[in-house]
Each structure stands twice: as C-alpha cells, then as structure tokens.
Length: 152
Image (cartoon, rainbow, N blue to C red; front, side, top):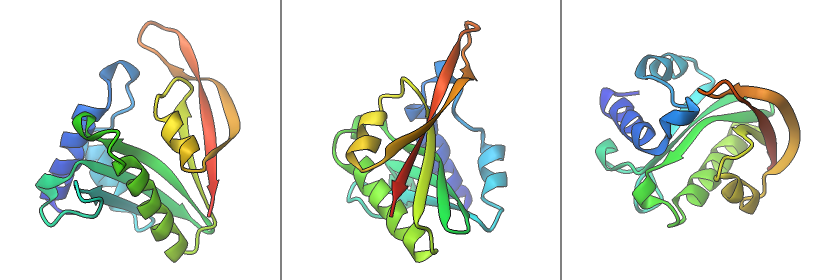
C-alpha cells in the first residue's frame, strides 16, 4: 500500500464515517492491517473501477480473507458520490476478488441503525446473527450489531 493510497482511504473515511459512531480507524490501524497478507484494500473511482490516481478515489473497502470466506472490515463511499451505484460496484468487485481467492461467503458486521443496510440487502446480504449491546455509544447507550452474509 502506497502513502497515496493510504491518504485516499483516510480522506474517504474522514468524510464518510460520522464521528458520533466511533467506527473510523486511524492511519496506523489501516497501515497495520494491510501489512497482513490476508488483508486487502480496494479503491474505487467514479467509473466504478480502480482509479489510475489514488487521489481520485471515491470509495474503498478493506477485507480480511480466511480459508473459504472473507470479511468486510471497512467499506465507505464519499457522501457526495453516494446513490450512484459505487457501493454496489464496490461490493461486486469485492465478491469477484473473494471468489478468485477461493471464498464462498462474505461476512460483514454493522450497527443495527446503519443506513447502508439497504445497500447490503439489495446486494444479496442476509442477516445471520445479532450481537446484543455490542456497540458503546458516546452517551453510554449500547446498540446491537447485526452480522450479514453473502453466499458467492
């Protein structure tokens, strides 16, 4: 991962993740995760493919592979680029890449009120589990996590 690609991920994450939920990772966490051979980043440009210049990225995803499966750790699209099909294209790209690595299923976990749920369900993800009171909110409240799976 180059510094320019890390910069692109951080720029998108800063814009796309609402700080009230505390879901964004810092640069060190991203860089550290991507040093592992089973963790992969995908950048997406306006055309729905990887941009020639990482600075033109409008979306990204980071996945972790395990034998037969993958987990989406982070996925984001710039707010001004949402509702243009980039999220769907990013998920399709992740699914293609996962199949090439031998995965038959992709997992993700999200807070129960995440508006991206609509996208995940539209792309074929099905809820398979719930972690009660998994997320701690700033006001001390707790929120459930929903686990989704997509069979490839």
